[in-house]
Amino acid sequence: MAKKNKAYITTPIYYVNDEPHIGHAYTTVVGDVLVRYHRQKGDDVFYLTGTDEHGAKIAESAMKSGLDTQEFCDMTAAKFQDAWKTLNISNDYFIRTTNKDHKEAVSKIFQTFHEKGLLEEKEYEGMYCVGCEKFLSERDLVDDKCPDHKREPESLKEKNWFFKLEQFLPKIQELIEKDEIQILPVTRKNEVLSLIKEGVMKDFSVSRQKTSVAWGVDLPFDDNQVSYVWVDALSNYITSIGYPDDMDKFNKWWPADLHLLAQDILKFHAIYWPAFLLALDLPLPKTLFIHGFFTINGEKMSKTIGNVIKPQELVDKYGVDATRYLLLSQFPFGQESDIREDHFVERYNADLANGYGNAVARVTTLIEKNELKIELDKKTDWLDSLGKHYSNYRFDLVIKDIMSRLQELDGYITEKAPWKIEDQDVLTEVLGKASNELWIVSQALLPFMPNIAQQVLDILEAEQIKKAPPLFPRLEN
View 1 (tube, helix red, strand yellow):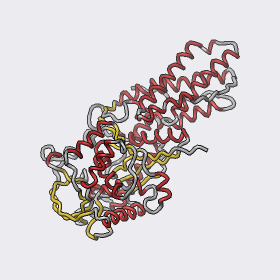
View 2: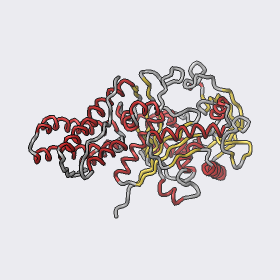
View 3: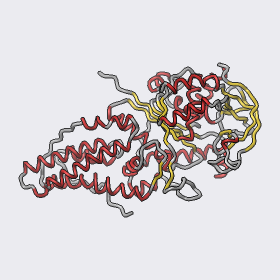
View 4: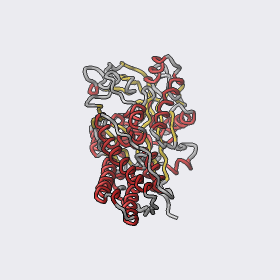
């Protein structure tokens, strides 16, 4: 029996100082489409997502809400879990960094670093942005403010534990250059290599004094310090699969086959994370895919502007499956792009209401009306050809190929005009071919639209095909 391929795919873990929005949903749906594709092929899959729940800005957000910090984390983490249920995300585990087992594992990781002499206690003075959870340099600032959070960083001076990053940089550079850690798109690979070659990456603080930040994982060797966000957060990728206590489970899944992330956390995943893994003598992740930010109708997503789109809003308007499809159909994955809400409606009507939904309705209505028995071929050769697009993370090209096949089917139905055919054998042949095409298209759409595509497959595979219910009611712009 052939050994199954393994696919361990992760999203970043999302800060609980914010509620789930279209940016979070985009990355998470991308991961879900990939894991559903791998499961469809018969691969062993583990899909991880979750929430990042420690740090100063989360404690600050909790205080503003009037809630205890843990209660605040519980409330917001539940919103992410609910959003992923709404979007039919099939994750195998939802990691929360306030989980007891995760915190214990992080403590053991710190202890290992300490015992190996990879931590050094040093005094640090710098400008700290609570919103970013990081120290900023002068070149990071715009008009003396953090460009992302529009606030002046705090001036901090305190004694912290620093991770000795610099000794790992030559090895990390070599691994990235050889694509042993593949960073995609290649522009991001070049960005990381530039950071290393410019000499700006230095040993960095991995802890904070409890007097400054109390909300974090306690260090096992220093009662006055807690973990600074990145050791805690990045370690989720290994603690979620058993490290360091369940090594059988860990060895089954690690290394990660794909880390999905946005560009703002590229440095931490492409430089800090490999350094931590090298320090632990662990294999490195195979691929990092970094997608750009996107704007909404030409403007940066902002609570102030009021253009933040929540997943539930899209689902209420388009339905779950159409929302998943539309999120991945507007532009190639990875690019910085602009989401146009009016294009959602246009694409919904063209591809789904007038395209897939209409084809299913026409074919199944005629089959039921004429009481035809249809035998499906269930050939999957063409489905296998989509693998090249998945391998390159070109979900837009997968969708393009599916829609091209659907358009060919629409042309075939129009040409044959089965509603005019009186010969039952000829009609059965024409509608049989149309049914087989719909079966193939539905199989191809399963990762994107798991509910509706499966509903169509169930109809087509029934002993007697019945008229499908309306799948995608037309929408007005």
